[in-house]
Image 1: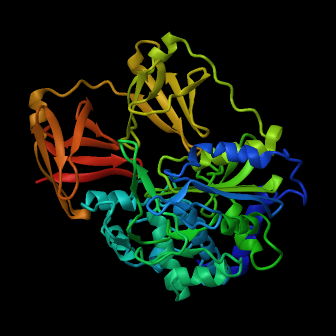
Image 2 (image 1 turned 90 degrees about the vertical axis):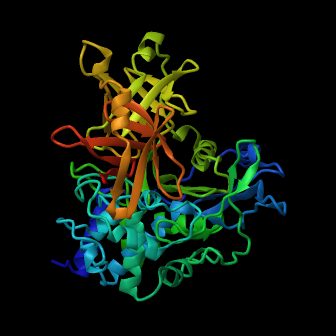
Amino acid sequence: MRISRSSLLMSIIAGACASGPAVGHPGSAATVPADRHTQVDAIFAPWTGTNTPGCAVGISRDGAVDYARGYGRANLEYDNPITPNSIFLSGSISKQFTAFAIALLAQDGKLSLDDDIRTYVPEMPDYGKTISIAQLIHHTSGLREQGQLLYLAGWRSDDVMTQDDMLAIAAKQRGLNFSPGSETLYNNLGYTLLAVIAERVSGKSLPEFAEERIFKPLGMADTHFQVDHNEIVRGRAAGYQAHADGSWRISIPASDYYGPTGVFTTVGDLLKWEKALVQPDAGSLQAPMAFMRTSATAESGSPSGYGGGVFVGTYRGLRTIGHDGVHAGYRTYAVAFPDQHLAIVTLCNGASIAPQELAQKIAAVYLGDRLAPPEGVVKASAAELAAWPGVYWSALTDEVVRVEMKDGALRPTGGSIPLESLGGGLFRSGETSRWQFNATTDAVPAGRELRIWDSWPTPRVFTRVQAPMPTDAELASFVGRYRIGEVDMTYAVLLTDGKLRVRWPRQSDLVLEPVGGDRFVSGAWTVTFTRSEVGAVDGFTFTARRLRRMRADRE
Protein backbone atom coordinates (compact mmCIF):
# COMPACT_ATOMS: atom_id res chain seq x y z
CA MET A 1 0.00 0.00 0.00
CA ARG A 2 1.30 3.47 -0.85
CA ILE A 3 1.94 5.45 2.31
CA SER A 4 0.77 9.04 2.43
CA ARG A 5 3.06 12.05 2.14
CA SER A 6 2.39 13.08 5.76
CA SER A 7 3.11 9.57 7.05
CA LEU A 8 6.36 9.50 5.11
CA LEU A 9 7.53 12.82 6.52
CA MET A 10 6.63 11.79 10.07
CA SER A 11 8.60 8.56 9.67
CA ILE A 12 11.62 10.46 8.33
CA ILE A 13 11.53 12.96 11.19
CA ALA A 14 10.99 10.22 13.77
CA GLY A 15 13.93 8.28 12.36
CA ALA A 16 16.15 11.34 12.56
CA CYS A 17 15.17 11.98 16.17
CA ALA A 18 15.85 8.35 17.05
CA SER A 19 19.35 8.59 15.65
CA GLY A 20 20.38 11.41 17.97
CA PRO A 21 20.61 15.17 17.61
CA ALA A 22 21.39 16.48 14.17
CA VAL A 23 23.77 19.19 15.30
CA GLY A 24 25.44 20.55 18.39
CA HIS A 25 24.66 23.91 19.96
CA PRO A 26 25.62 27.06 18.06
CA GLY A 27 29.23 27.97 18.60
CA SER A 28 30.08 24.45 19.76
CA ALA A 29 33.37 24.42 17.83
CA ALA A 30 36.07 24.96 20.46
CA THR A 31 39.27 26.93 20.16
CA VAL A 32 41.63 25.64 17.51
CA PRO A 33 45.37 26.20 17.14
CA ALA A 34 46.40 29.59 15.83
CA ASP A 35 48.84 27.94 13.43
CA ARG A 36 46.24 25.49 12.10
CA HIS A 37 46.60 26.67 8.49
CA THR A 38 50.36 26.13 8.62
CA GLN A 39 49.74 22.63 9.98
CA VAL A 40 47.29 21.91 7.15
CA ASP A 41 49.85 23.10 4.61
CA ALA A 42 52.37 20.68 6.09
CA ILE A 43 49.92 17.78 5.62
CA PHE A 44 49.78 18.51 1.88
CA ALA A 45 53.51 19.12 1.49
CA PRO A 46 54.02 15.99 -0.69
CA TRP A 47 51.60 17.43 -3.25
CA THR A 48 52.94 20.95 -3.63
CA GLY A 49 55.34 20.37 -6.52
CA THR A 50 55.01 21.67 -10.05
CA ASN A 51 55.13 18.22 -11.64
CA THR A 52 52.52 16.41 -9.61
CA PRO A 53 48.73 16.40 -9.31
CA GLY A 54 47.39 17.33 -5.91
CA CYS A 55 44.32 18.47 -4.00
CA ALA A 56 42.03 21.33 -3.19
CA VAL A 57 41.04 21.52 0.46
CA GLY A 58 38.18 23.40 2.10
CA ILE A 59 37.49 23.63 5.84
CA SER A 60 34.53 25.30 7.52
CA ARG A 61 33.77 26.03 11.18
CA ASP A 62 30.27 26.96 12.35
CA GLY A 63 29.20 27.10 8.72
CA ALA A 64 31.80 29.67 7.66
CA VAL A 65 34.85 28.90 5.52
CA ASP A 66 37.95 28.85 7.72
CA TYR A 67 40.53 27.81 5.12
CA ALA A 68 40.62 26.92 1.45
CA ARG A 69 43.69 26.27 -0.66
CA GLY A 70 44.99 24.27 -3.60
CA TYR A 71 48.12 22.15 -3.78
CA GLY A 72 49.78 20.69 -6.87
CA ARG A 73 48.76 21.00 -10.51
CA ALA A 74 45.29 20.89 -12.05
CA ASN A 75 46.80 20.20 -15.45
CA LEU A 76 50.30 18.83 -15.91
CA GLU A 77 50.35 19.70 -19.61
CA TYR A 78 49.79 23.39 -19.08
CA ASP A 79 51.19 23.73 -15.55
CA ASN A 80 47.92 25.16 -14.21
CA PRO A 81 47.88 25.16 -10.39
CA ILE A 82 45.04 23.74 -8.33
CA THR A 83 43.08 26.47 -6.54
CA PRO A 84 40.01 26.41 -4.28
CA ASN A 85 38.00 27.19 -7.43
CA SER A 86 39.27 24.16 -9.35
CA ILE A 87 36.48 21.81 -10.40
CA PHE A 88 36.80 18.07 -9.77
CA LEU A 89 34.74 15.02 -10.65
CA SER A 90 33.50 14.01 -7.20
CA GLY A 91 32.85 10.30 -7.88
CA SER A 92 30.59 8.69 -5.30
CA ILE A 93 30.09 11.92 -3.38
CA SER A 94 27.48 12.34 -6.14
CA LYS A 95 25.31 9.68 -4.51
CA GLN A 96 24.05 12.03 -1.80
CA PHE A 97 22.66 14.42 -4.41
CA THR A 98 20.88 11.56 -6.17
CA ALA A 99 19.45 10.35 -2.86
CA PHE A 100 18.39 13.89 -1.96
CA ALA A 101 16.56 14.26 -5.27
CA ILE A 102 14.58 11.13 -4.40
CA ALA A 103 13.89 12.45 -0.89
CA LEU A 104 12.57 15.70 -2.38
CA LEU A 105 10.27 13.78 -4.72
CA ALA A 106 9.03 11.74 -1.75
CA GLN A 107 8.33 14.97 0.11
CA ASP A 108 6.46 16.22 -2.97
CA GLY A 109 4.25 13.12 -2.73
CA LYS A 110 5.32 11.86 -6.15
CA LEU A 111 6.75 8.57 -4.91
CA SER A 112 7.15 6.50 -1.77
CA LEU A 113 10.46 5.14 -0.56
CA ASP A 114 8.69 1.80 -0.12
CA ASP A 115 7.62 1.63 -3.77
CA ASP A 116 8.67 -1.34 -5.89
CA ILE A 117 11.32 -0.09 -8.32
CA ARG A 118 9.53 -1.93 -11.14
CA THR A 119 6.70 0.60 -10.79
CA TYR A 120 9.04 3.10 -12.42
CA VAL A 121 11.57 0.84 -14.14
CA PRO A 122 9.47 -2.01 -15.58
CA GLU A 123 12.47 -3.13 -17.65
CA MET A 124 13.92 -4.70 -14.50
CA PRO A 125 13.18 -8.41 -14.06
CA ASP A 126 10.79 -9.76 -11.46
CA TYR A 127 13.04 -11.52 -8.95
CA GLY A 128 10.14 -12.90 -6.93
CA LYS A 129 10.79 -10.39 -4.15
CA THR A 130 10.22 -6.64 -4.19
CA ILE A 131 13.19 -4.32 -4.40
CA SER A 132 12.18 -0.97 -2.93
CA ILE A 133 13.51 2.51 -3.67
CA ALA A 134 14.82 2.69 -0.10
CA GLN A 135 16.82 -0.50 -0.67
CA LEU A 136 18.51 1.10 -3.67
CA ILE A 137 19.45 4.09 -1.53
CA HIS A 138 20.78 2.00 1.36
CA HIS A 139 22.67 -0.63 -0.68
CA THR A 140 20.43 -3.49 0.43
CA SER A 141 18.88 -4.33 -2.96
CA GLY A 142 21.06 -7.36 -3.74
CA LEU A 143 21.64 -6.12 -7.30
CA ARG A 144 24.87 -7.04 -9.05
CA GLU A 145 27.51 -4.36 -9.60
CA GLN A 146 27.13 -2.64 -12.98
CA GLY A 147 30.83 -2.12 -13.73
CA GLN A 148 31.67 -5.76 -13.08
CA LEU A 149 28.79 -6.89 -15.30
CA LEU A 150 30.06 -4.73 -18.15
CA TYR A 151 33.59 -6.05 -17.61
CA LEU A 152 32.34 -9.62 -18.00
CA ALA A 153 30.46 -8.48 -21.11
CA GLY A 154 33.74 -7.32 -22.68
CA TRP A 155 33.51 -3.60 -21.96
CA ARG A 156 36.71 -1.71 -21.20
CA SER A 157 37.04 1.03 -18.60
CA ASP A 158 37.65 3.68 -21.29
CA ASP A 159 34.57 2.76 -23.33
CA VAL A 160 31.78 5.33 -23.38
CA MET A 161 29.10 4.05 -20.99
CA THR A 162 25.64 5.63 -20.94
CA GLN A 163 22.55 5.39 -18.74
CA ASP A 164 20.95 3.21 -21.43
CA ASP A 165 23.96 0.86 -21.41
CA MET A 166 23.66 0.39 -17.65
CA LEU A 167 19.92 -0.15 -17.81
CA ALA A 168 20.30 -2.66 -20.65
CA ILE A 169 22.79 -4.86 -18.78
CA ALA A 170 20.69 -4.63 -15.60
CA ALA A 171 17.54 -5.70 -17.42
CA LYS A 172 19.25 -8.94 -18.54
CA GLN A 173 20.04 -10.09 -15.01
CA ARG A 174 18.08 -13.07 -13.72
CA GLY A 175 19.77 -13.37 -10.35
CA LEU A 176 20.76 -11.31 -7.32
CA ASN A 177 23.68 -11.35 -4.93
CA PHE A 178 21.28 -11.88 -2.02
CA SER A 179 17.63 -11.53 -1.09
CA PRO A 180 16.63 -7.85 -1.01
CA GLY A 181 16.95 -6.39 2.47
CA SER A 182 18.91 -9.31 3.93
CA GLU A 183 22.40 -7.76 3.63
CA THR A 184 24.17 -4.47 2.98
CA LEU A 185 26.63 -4.41 0.07
CA TYR A 186 27.78 -1.26 -1.67
CA ASN A 187 26.29 -1.06 -5.17
CA ASN A 188 26.51 1.54 -7.95
CA LEU A 189 23.74 0.11 -10.14
CA GLY A 190 21.20 1.04 -7.48
CA TYR A 191 22.10 4.71 -7.86
CA THR A 192 21.95 4.55 -11.64
CA LEU A 193 18.41 3.23 -11.26
CA LEU A 194 17.61 5.98 -8.74
CA ALA A 195 18.62 8.54 -11.38
CA VAL A 196 16.30 6.84 -13.87
CA ILE A 197 13.45 6.87 -11.32
CA ALA A 198 14.01 10.55 -10.47
CA GLU A 199 13.82 11.47 -14.14
CA ARG A 200 10.72 9.43 -14.90
CA VAL A 201 8.87 10.75 -11.85
CA SER A 202 9.90 14.40 -12.16
CA GLY A 203 9.65 14.59 -15.94
CA LYS A 204 13.07 16.26 -16.02
CA SER A 205 16.60 15.01 -16.41
CA LEU A 206 18.41 14.51 -13.12
CA PRO A 207 20.91 17.28 -14.01
CA GLU A 208 17.99 19.68 -14.63
CA PHE A 209 16.16 18.63 -11.47
CA ALA A 210 19.29 18.89 -9.32
CA GLU A 211 20.12 22.33 -10.71
CA GLU A 212 16.60 23.61 -10.05
CA ARG A 213 15.95 22.02 -6.64
CA ILE A 214 19.41 21.56 -5.08
CA PHE A 215 22.37 23.40 -6.59
CA LYS A 216 20.76 26.75 -7.44
CA PRO A 217 18.86 27.16 -4.13
CA LEU A 218 22.05 26.39 -2.17
CA GLY A 219 24.20 28.75 -4.23
CA MET A 220 26.34 25.91 -5.64
CA ALA A 221 27.10 27.78 -8.85
CA ASP A 222 30.07 25.62 -9.86
CA THR A 223 28.34 22.25 -9.40
CA HIS A 224 26.51 20.15 -11.97
CA PHE A 225 25.79 16.58 -13.07
CA GLN A 226 27.68 15.79 -16.27
CA VAL A 227 25.74 14.02 -19.05
CA ASP A 228 28.33 14.32 -21.84
CA HIS A 229 31.98 13.53 -21.18
CA ASN A 230 32.93 15.74 -24.15
CA GLU A 231 31.49 18.91 -22.61
CA ILE A 232 33.79 21.81 -21.76
CA VAL A 233 34.11 22.32 -18.00
CA ARG A 234 35.95 25.58 -17.39
CA GLY A 235 38.38 25.31 -14.50
CA ARG A 236 38.31 21.50 -14.43
CA ALA A 237 41.27 19.67 -12.93
CA ALA A 238 42.37 16.71 -15.05
CA GLY A 239 42.62 13.27 -13.42
CA TYR A 240 45.86 11.27 -13.35
CA GLN A 241 47.12 7.73 -12.69
CA ALA A 242 50.67 6.99 -11.60
CA HIS A 243 52.69 4.96 -14.10
CA ALA A 244 55.09 2.19 -13.15
CA ASP A 245 58.06 4.37 -14.09
CA GLY A 246 56.96 7.11 -11.67
CA SER A 247 55.46 9.41 -14.30
CA TRP A 248 51.79 10.35 -14.57
CA ARG A 249 49.18 9.39 -17.18
CA ILE A 250 45.90 11.15 -17.93
CA SER A 251 42.92 9.36 -16.40
CA ILE A 252 39.64 11.11 -17.20
CA PRO A 253 36.59 8.84 -17.56
CA ALA A 254 34.61 8.64 -20.78
CA SER A 255 31.41 8.14 -18.81
CA ASP A 256 27.97 9.41 -19.78
CA TYR A 257 26.08 7.75 -16.93
CA TYR A 258 25.27 9.47 -13.66
CA GLY A 259 23.57 8.91 -10.33
CA PRO A 260 26.33 6.98 -8.58
CA THR A 261 28.86 9.50 -9.94
CA GLY A 262 28.88 12.39 -12.39
CA VAL A 263 28.85 15.50 -10.17
CA PHE A 264 31.53 18.11 -10.90
CA THR A 265 32.08 20.51 -8.03
CA THR A 266 34.46 22.61 -5.94
CA VAL A 267 35.47 22.56 -2.29
CA GLY A 268 33.55 25.79 -1.71
CA ASP A 269 30.32 24.41 -3.13
CA LEU A 270 30.62 21.20 -1.15
CA LEU A 271 31.10 23.19 2.06
CA LYS A 272 27.79 24.93 1.29
CA TRP A 273 26.21 21.50 0.88
CA GLU A 274 27.74 20.22 4.13
CA LYS A 275 26.28 23.19 6.00
CA ALA A 276 22.81 22.51 4.57
CA LEU A 277 23.14 18.80 5.34
CA VAL A 278 23.86 19.22 9.05
CA GLN A 279 22.30 22.63 9.72
CA PRO A 280 19.23 22.91 7.47
CA ASP A 281 17.26 26.11 7.85
CA ALA A 282 13.71 25.76 9.14
CA GLY A 283 11.41 24.94 6.28
CA SER A 284 11.18 22.54 3.39
CA LEU A 285 14.68 21.04 3.68
CA GLN A 286 14.36 19.78 7.24
CA ALA A 287 12.57 16.50 6.60
CA PRO A 288 14.55 15.32 3.55
CA MET A 289 17.82 16.33 5.22
CA ALA A 290 16.81 14.38 8.33
CA PHE A 291 16.31 11.35 6.10
CA MET A 292 19.75 11.86 4.59
CA ARG A 293 21.41 11.84 8.03
CA THR A 294 19.55 8.77 9.31
CA SER A 295 21.17 5.36 9.08
CA ALA A 296 19.18 2.51 7.60
CA THR A 297 18.39 -0.41 9.89
CA ALA A 298 19.70 -3.88 9.10
CA GLU A 299 17.54 -7.01 9.45
CA SER A 300 19.15 -7.57 12.84
CA GLY A 301 17.76 -4.23 14.00
CA SER A 302 21.16 -2.56 14.24
CA PRO A 303 22.07 0.53 12.20
CA SER A 304 23.74 -0.26 8.89
CA GLY A 305 25.81 2.92 9.01
CA TYR A 306 24.50 4.25 5.68
CA GLY A 307 21.93 7.00 5.27
CA GLY A 308 20.90 8.87 2.15
CA GLY A 309 24.03 8.52 0.05
CA VAL A 310 26.28 9.16 3.06
CA PHE A 311 28.02 7.06 5.68
CA VAL A 312 26.70 7.86 9.14
CA GLY A 313 29.24 6.79 11.74
CA THR A 314 31.99 7.90 14.07
CA TYR A 315 35.66 8.72 13.85
CA ARG A 316 37.66 8.35 17.05
CA GLY A 317 34.57 8.83 19.19
CA LEU A 318 32.94 11.74 17.30
CA ARG A 319 29.92 11.51 15.04
CA THR A 320 30.58 11.91 11.33
CA ILE A 321 28.56 12.20 8.14
CA GLY A 322 30.62 11.71 5.02
CA HIS A 323 31.45 9.93 1.80
CA ASP A 324 34.43 9.24 -0.40
CA GLY A 325 34.64 9.22 -4.19
CA VAL A 326 36.72 7.23 -6.68
CA HIS A 327 36.42 7.58 -10.45
CA ALA A 328 39.32 7.17 -12.88
CA GLY A 329 42.12 9.44 -11.58
CA TYR A 330 39.93 11.40 -9.18
CA ARG A 331 39.92 10.77 -5.42
CA THR A 332 37.60 12.77 -3.15
CA TYR A 333 36.27 12.93 0.39
CA ALA A 334 33.79 15.18 2.21
CA VAL A 335 32.99 14.79 5.90
CA ALA A 336 31.15 16.75 8.58
CA PHE A 337 31.58 16.50 12.33
CA PRO A 338 28.08 17.81 13.09
CA ASP A 339 28.41 18.17 16.86
CA GLN A 340 31.62 20.18 16.46
CA HIS A 341 30.34 22.20 13.48
CA LEU A 342 33.40 21.23 11.47
CA ALA A 343 33.36 20.21 7.79
CA ILE A 344 36.34 19.13 5.68
CA VAL A 345 36.46 18.59 1.91
CA THR A 346 39.47 17.18 0.07
CA LEU A 347 39.25 16.90 -3.73
CA CYS A 348 42.27 15.31 -5.43
CA ASN A 349 43.25 14.51 -9.01
CA GLY A 350 45.81 11.75 -8.49
CA ALA A 351 44.74 8.13 -8.08
CA SER A 352 47.51 7.42 -5.55
CA ILE A 353 46.38 10.22 -3.20
CA ALA A 354 44.31 9.23 -0.15
CA PRO A 355 41.93 12.16 0.56
CA GLN A 356 40.19 10.45 3.49
CA GLU A 357 43.49 10.04 5.32
CA LEU A 358 44.34 13.67 4.60
CA ALA A 359 40.96 14.81 5.96
CA GLN A 360 41.50 12.75 9.11
CA LYS A 361 44.85 14.46 9.67
CA ILE A 362 43.13 17.83 9.25
CA ALA A 363 40.49 16.75 11.78
CA ALA A 364 43.28 15.97 14.26
CA VAL A 365 44.61 19.53 13.85
CA TYR A 366 41.20 21.15 14.41
CA LEU A 367 39.72 18.82 17.02
CA GLY A 368 42.81 17.93 19.02
CA ASP A 369 42.13 15.97 22.19
CA ARG A 370 38.38 15.92 21.53
CA LEU A 371 39.23 12.96 19.32
CA ALA A 372 39.57 9.74 21.28
CA PRO A 373 43.06 8.23 21.19
CA PRO A 374 43.55 5.74 18.36
CA GLU A 375 43.50 2.07 19.25
CA GLY A 376 46.82 0.97 20.63
CA VAL A 377 48.88 -1.36 18.47
CA VAL A 378 50.12 -4.47 20.28
CA LYS A 379 53.29 -6.24 19.20
CA ALA A 380 52.35 -9.77 18.16
CA SER A 381 54.78 -12.58 18.67
CA ALA A 382 56.39 -14.30 15.71
CA ALA A 383 54.61 -17.52 16.69
CA GLU A 384 51.21 -15.80 16.68
CA LEU A 385 51.79 -14.16 13.30
CA ALA A 386 53.00 -17.44 11.81
CA ALA A 387 49.67 -19.09 12.66
CA TRP A 388 47.54 -16.94 10.36
CA PRO A 389 48.96 -16.87 6.80
CA GLY A 390 46.94 -18.98 4.37
CA VAL A 391 43.94 -19.03 2.08
CA TYR A 392 40.46 -18.29 3.46
CA TRP A 393 37.12 -18.84 1.71
CA SER A 394 33.60 -17.50 2.34
CA ALA A 395 30.83 -20.07 2.01
CA LEU A 396 28.30 -17.23 1.77
CA THR A 397 29.87 -15.21 -1.04
CA ASP A 398 32.51 -17.57 -2.56
CA GLU A 399 35.15 -14.86 -2.06
CA VAL A 400 38.73 -15.84 -1.33
CA VAL A 401 41.11 -13.87 0.89
CA ARG A 402 44.81 -14.74 0.99
CA VAL A 403 47.07 -13.71 3.86
CA GLU A 404 50.87 -13.77 3.80
CA MET A 405 53.86 -12.89 5.96
CA LYS A 406 56.06 -10.33 4.25
CA ASP A 407 58.81 -8.11 5.66
CA GLY A 408 57.99 -9.35 9.14
CA ALA A 409 54.33 -8.32 8.98
CA LEU A 410 51.01 -9.98 8.27
CA ARG A 411 49.23 -8.57 5.22
CA PRO A 412 46.75 -9.47 2.48
CA THR A 413 48.67 -11.21 -0.28
CA GLY A 414 50.11 -8.59 -2.62
CA GLY A 415 48.97 -5.77 -0.34
CA SER A 416 51.22 -2.85 0.51
CA ILE A 417 49.71 -2.05 3.91
CA PRO A 418 50.44 -4.46 6.77
CA LEU A 419 47.83 -5.59 9.27
CA GLU A 420 48.46 -4.06 12.70
CA SER A 421 47.84 -6.21 15.76
CA LEU A 422 45.38 -5.01 18.38
CA GLY A 423 45.80 -8.18 20.47
CA GLY A 424 43.85 -11.42 20.78
CA GLY A 425 44.04 -12.24 17.08
CA LEU A 426 42.44 -8.89 16.15
CA PHE A 427 44.16 -6.73 13.53
CA ARG A 428 43.30 -3.47 11.85
CA SER A 429 43.75 -2.42 8.24
CA GLY A 430 43.43 1.34 8.08
CA GLU A 431 40.98 3.21 10.29
CA THR A 432 37.83 1.17 9.70
CA SER A 433 38.67 -2.37 8.61
CA ARG A 434 39.12 -5.03 11.30
CA TRP A 435 40.39 -8.59 10.79
CA GLN A 436 39.70 -11.13 13.54
CA PHE A 437 41.51 -14.46 13.37
CA ASN A 438 39.98 -17.18 15.54
CA ALA A 439 40.98 -20.81 16.04
CA THR A 440 37.81 -22.85 15.60
CA THR A 441 39.58 -26.01 16.69
CA ASP A 442 42.61 -26.74 18.83
CA ALA A 443 43.69 -29.59 16.57
CA VAL A 444 45.47 -28.07 13.57
CA PRO A 445 45.94 -24.61 12.05
CA ALA A 446 43.71 -25.63 9.13
CA GLY A 447 40.69 -25.20 11.38
CA ARG A 448 40.98 -21.43 11.61
CA GLU A 449 38.40 -18.75 10.90
CA LEU A 450 38.72 -15.16 9.72
CA ARG A 451 36.10 -12.44 10.16
CA ILE A 452 36.48 -9.11 8.34
CA TRP A 453 34.56 -5.96 9.20
CA ASP A 454 34.70 -3.30 6.50
CA SER A 455 32.20 -0.43 6.31
CA TRP A 456 29.24 -2.49 7.49
CA PRO A 457 28.36 -3.87 10.96
CA THR A 458 28.04 -7.49 9.75
CA PRO A 459 31.36 -9.28 9.25
CA ARG A 460 32.39 -11.35 6.27
CA VAL A 461 33.17 -14.84 7.55
CA PHE A 462 35.93 -16.99 6.03
CA THR A 463 37.36 -20.41 6.86
CA ARG A 464 40.79 -21.83 6.04
CA VAL A 465 40.88 -23.65 2.70
CA GLN A 466 41.89 -27.31 3.21
CA ALA A 467 41.29 -28.81 -0.24
CA PRO A 468 44.36 -30.18 -2.10
CA MET A 469 45.76 -28.44 -5.17
CA PRO A 470 44.47 -29.76 -8.51
CA THR A 471 46.53 -32.31 -10.43
CA ASP A 472 47.65 -31.77 -14.02
CA ALA A 473 44.82 -34.04 -15.18
CA GLU A 474 42.29 -32.04 -13.20
CA LEU A 475 43.59 -28.78 -14.66
CA ALA A 476 43.17 -30.24 -18.15
CA SER A 477 39.56 -31.19 -17.36
CA PHE A 478 38.65 -27.51 -16.93
CA VAL A 479 39.67 -26.56 -20.48
CA GLY A 480 36.71 -25.69 -22.69
CA ARG A 481 34.17 -23.05 -23.68
CA TYR A 482 31.67 -21.54 -21.27
CA ARG A 483 28.87 -19.04 -21.71
CA ILE A 484 26.94 -16.48 -19.61
CA GLY A 485 23.73 -15.50 -21.35
CA GLU A 486 23.06 -12.60 -18.95
CA VAL A 487 26.08 -10.74 -20.32
CA ASP A 488 25.96 -12.35 -23.78
CA MET A 489 29.55 -13.58 -23.61
CA THR A 490 31.43 -16.82 -24.28
CA TYR A 491 34.67 -17.56 -22.42
CA ALA A 492 37.50 -19.88 -23.36
CA VAL A 493 39.38 -21.64 -20.56
CA LEU A 494 42.89 -22.51 -21.78
CA LEU A 495 45.84 -24.36 -20.26
CA THR A 496 49.20 -22.86 -21.20
CA ASP A 497 52.54 -23.47 -19.47
CA GLY A 498 50.73 -25.27 -16.66
CA LYS A 499 48.43 -22.30 -15.92
CA LEU A 500 44.72 -21.95 -16.57
CA ARG A 501 43.57 -18.80 -18.31
CA VAL A 502 40.11 -17.37 -18.93
CA ARG A 503 39.96 -15.48 -22.24
CA TRP A 504 37.18 -13.43 -23.80
CA PRO A 505 37.02 -10.57 -26.34
CA ARG A 506 38.43 -7.12 -25.51
CA GLN A 507 39.84 -8.11 -22.11
CA SER A 508 43.21 -9.29 -20.90
CA ASP A 509 43.34 -12.94 -19.86
CA LEU A 510 42.58 -13.84 -16.27
CA VAL A 511 45.47 -16.06 -15.19
CA LEU A 512 44.04 -18.44 -12.58
CA GLU A 513 46.03 -19.35 -9.48
CA PRO A 514 44.80 -22.51 -7.73
CA VAL A 515 43.91 -22.20 -4.05
CA GLY A 516 42.57 -25.72 -3.54
CA GLY A 517 40.11 -28.09 -5.18
CA ASP A 518 38.08 -26.53 -8.00
CA ARG A 519 38.67 -22.96 -6.83
CA PHE A 520 41.04 -20.38 -8.34
CA VAL A 521 41.79 -16.68 -7.93
CA SER A 522 42.93 -13.95 -10.30
CA GLY A 523 43.32 -10.49 -8.82
CA ALA A 524 39.98 -9.53 -7.26
CA TRP A 525 38.15 -12.44 -8.92
CA THR A 526 37.39 -15.93 -7.64
CA VAL A 527 36.65 -18.56 -10.29
CA THR A 528 35.06 -21.77 -9.00
CA PHE A 529 34.42 -24.68 -11.35
CA THR A 530 31.23 -26.65 -10.77
CA ARG A 531 30.46 -30.30 -11.37
CA SER A 532 27.46 -32.38 -12.34
CA GLU A 533 26.06 -35.17 -10.18
CA VAL A 534 28.46 -37.59 -11.85
CA GLY A 535 31.46 -35.34 -11.21
CA ALA A 536 31.95 -33.89 -14.69
CA VAL A 537 32.90 -30.20 -14.97
CA ASP A 538 29.73 -28.45 -16.16
CA GLY A 539 30.51 -24.77 -15.62
CA PHE A 540 32.15 -22.19 -13.43
CA THR A 541 31.19 -19.10 -11.44
CA PHE A 542 32.73 -15.62 -11.28
CA THR A 543 32.79 -13.92 -7.89
CA ALA A 544 34.09 -10.50 -6.87
CA ARG A 545 33.33 -8.27 -3.90
CA ARG A 546 30.09 -6.91 -5.41
CA LEU A 547 29.13 -9.77 -7.72
CA ARG A 548 28.53 -13.28 -6.44
CA ARG A 549 28.55 -16.61 -8.25
CA MET A 550 27.80 -15.38 -11.77
CA ARG A 551 27.41 -18.72 -13.54
CA ALA A 552 28.92 -19.69 -16.89
CA ASP A 553 27.62 -22.95 -18.36
CA ARG A 554 29.90 -25.28 -20.29
CA GLU A 555 29.04 -25.46 -23.97
